[in-house]
Image 1 (cartoon, rainbow, N blue to C red):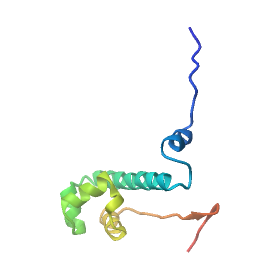
Image 2: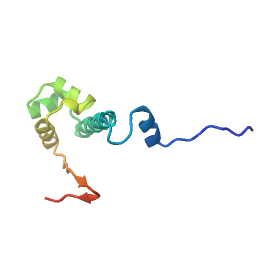
Image 3: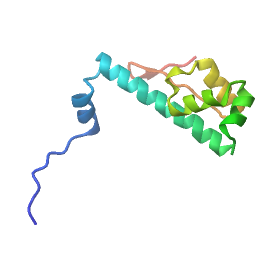
Image 4: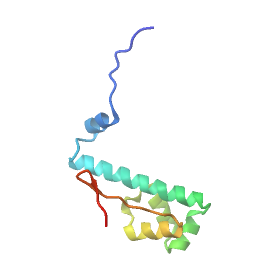
Length: 107
């Protein structure tokens, strides 16, 4: 069998090449969208764990089903207050961790 001459790249190398290096505006925008997509997926996973529809969750939070759908598909337009209300309605324990200069900030 012939040996492959394919070069192997890390995910970070690919993202840097396609999106931009750390600290660049394009990389920050990409990472923000990715983080918001993950947050939306967490909302959906928690909702499904409770066996609720989007409409049921929306009623408990006081928003329309369409807003729950938008948040689940991309939370980048969601207000922090709405996200907190959603997770409270789902009885989810949410913890936010802030790291700065290698240290986890405590309050």
